[in-house]
Amino acid sequence: MLHLRSHSSPEWPGWALAHLDEILLDHAHCEKKAASTAINLIFRYTQHESLMEPLSALAREELEHFELVLGHLRRRGRAFVRQQPSAYASRLMEVCRKHEPGRVIDTLLCCSMIEARSCERMQRLHGALAARCDAGAEDADPALALLYESLLASEARHHATYVDLARGLQLVSEDELRARLHEIAEHEASVVARASGEPRLHDGP
Image (cartoon, rainbow, N blue to C red; front, side):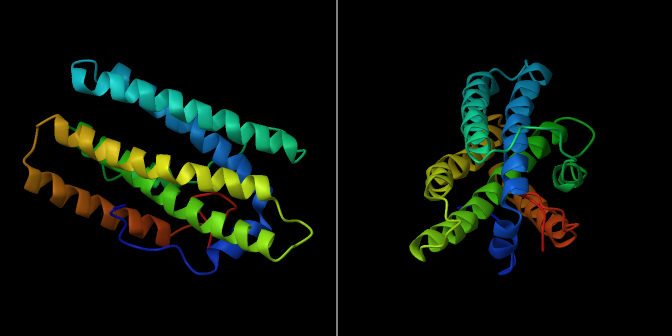
């Protein structure tokens, strides 16, 4: 269960296909940022031993995904270059409380929502890519369709991992955790509704 409070618009998959190389470049940057976030949390919250090994494993997996996406960029003749990031993550993180233990709980839950939205968008993108392959379109990319199909389970698992890590800290009750997850999911939906329309994985119509 992804705990999302909104769905991407029906126009998003077609729009993403029209900006596929830009979306793929952004995806590479997102995987790199996800690995960096996990590592930063290890350094910031060394006192929480239960976070260390799961975040280390998660960072390694995100880097593996980063390398996979880099390979597809090269295959499509695109270079990995700097790109103006979407405002999605920074706007989402605005909901985080400034003081502990609220800060660590909110940060982990925001990370879980990023993974959930990534899973939802990748699922829709896979569907659009697969449909293009089934239709025999000249620009069909079966390898890219397989990439996005292969990433769905791990994105959903990462979402659950971050929620479980917040729960495992035992800093709040289960009711408090669920209530805060609901609040952050509502906030995430409002961030998606205010997307700028830039060709990014977490942006668009």
